[in-house]
Image (cartoon, rainbow, N blue to C red):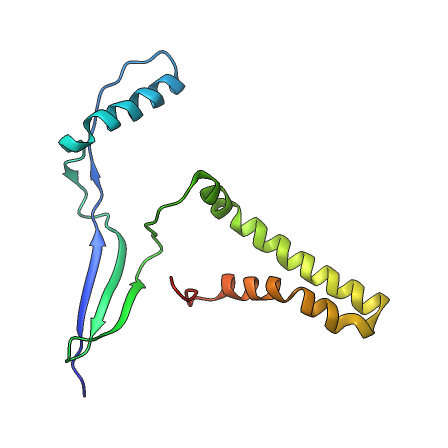
Length: 146
């Protein structure tokens, strides 16, 4: 039996408060952003919430030779990453996009079966990227490089 060393991690959210005067919600948001930009280096969030950790993960598992045998394994559903506003909108729309992709794939194959069964293989091949995307979305295994 081999002994492995496991490095776990989780992030603890920290909270901080500020008073901001504004005439509208939009102005309050703008002032809050400006307040953050001007004061973040001073540590605006110094109240930890130890009971609400996020991004729980296995950072690495090493064998007895200290060689990593596994890395970056999520243990909860939280995700920490950098994304543009457009990428966040796509992520939010992902369930609808997946449903539309499934429906489009099924409808194209049904039409091919009805109208030209000899071309069914061709249409299935054309939709191969869609099938792979659906399989990846339904899998619990992260894509390579994640």
